[in-house]
Length: 145
Image (cartoon, rainbow, N blue to C red; front, side):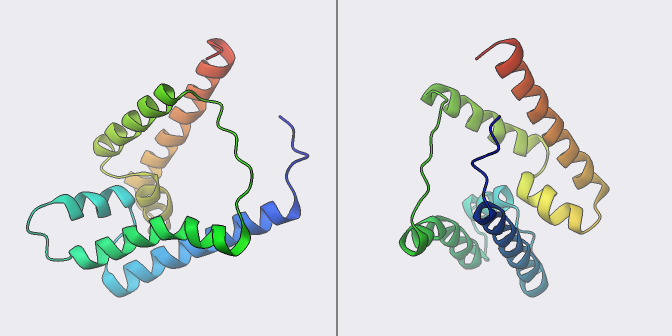
């Protein structure tokens, strides 16, 4: 792994992004009493008869708009995706299934749940992380996929 491509701007961007995510999650829970878990927000939007659709739509539109605003403001870095399309599709489906079994996604458990001191969220996040570590080790180092 070559760490020479990391620069001070990488750290600043990561830190700033983390602050913005934390701020947005805190504002949503303080002013709306809701957790900023993307799977829960999207799932609630898809349920018929939900009365709180407006804030869910606005939240999701913000997620979609943010990369475009960033691109206009700062430009996009060069990105190389080494995985094949089918691998990305399978990975996405597995993540979606996992969020249903875990009763939430990494943003809900990792950002919001841990900050609230939820034991269930701490356990879920540790499980997500360990599953990711094991998957990368198996696929890249043992199987060479």
